[in-house]
Length: 431
Image 1 (cartoon, rainbow, N blue to C red):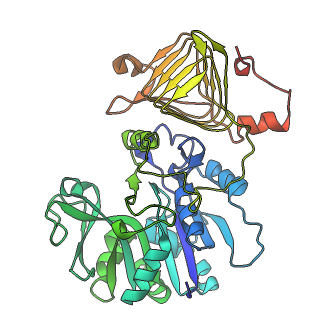
Image 2 (image 1 turned 45 degrees about the vertical axis):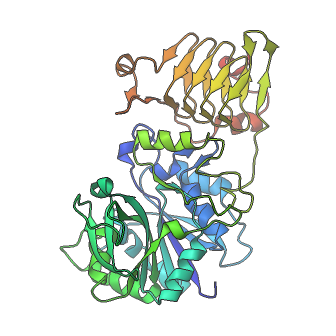
Image 3 (image 1 turned 135 degrees about the vertical axis):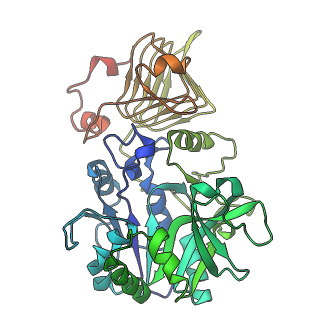
């Protein structure tokens, strides 16, 4: 890339549909896939694509996200243009308000864009699970001579009411935006699919700055890119749709299709985690040429112990992150985070378990999500009867039981590593 590129990542969303996983954290900070956070996907895509200047705009319940960025995404500032810097909401609007929309979030930090003097600005969301070679999108933007490029993905037309849909000409130029309309036009030549906006945009810098100022002083605007700025731009600028299905990740065979998933609900989040367990997963975390997240690891390897009949620690069709110990328990079709303990006689099936959870002896857990530091008592049964679970836990529309954990600003395992032998809870010892 021969143009100066600055990335602005929008990471301040409440994620209300992911409650209770967002009870104590913003949506981009929700753990995913055993050892990552949702925000790691957009940041990994940027770094792997050679974009090293990134501001992460935060707002709601940002402490967990800020800590994660500090602990895992600091470059060391060897060069002035290599940084990932979190930017808390600073209330720079005339009324000193929180961000009023996606466009307002960028406008309130417009001084950062002016100071960097980039040729193009990437405005990307931190809310989705996907891999993307952003270099391809930048090259498309350059080749088209575009003022704005909108990353778009084909979706079944039945889902048009759930997304912002772009109507495109055959050359890829956007003719119109349709915000969550069931009758939105389909893709030319493909009557079964619509082009849904992924919430990722590339702007030529001067066009972005001009439109942000115009929008800020428009009292009728909701100050949102999808609702306000982009629909108005198509009449006075060159706005194109980039087809995400044409994107290719280095190191992936040509047969691997691009993966993008909106994990805005408990059920969608659960299914995306389950996608990781396949023999050939649609979301490939094992491509060494396109790593996900920082590589630093402070946890020991996972361990499976005891080989007695009826008391054998093992996992089948599952992901077990570092630091986990399966002590005579059985895990099937599940994703386990770091430092998870599964004690003798316990059975875990089709679950997503976050860091430092403890599954007691002879407990049985099915189709559940356990938040960080959750404890399942001995002999407990969770997930077999959603109606019974509703009296105690949050249960999703599709019957996924969510067990809240213990909020902590510091990872329990990190505390134990820093103070070995001190403060070890009885429930953490192998039994």
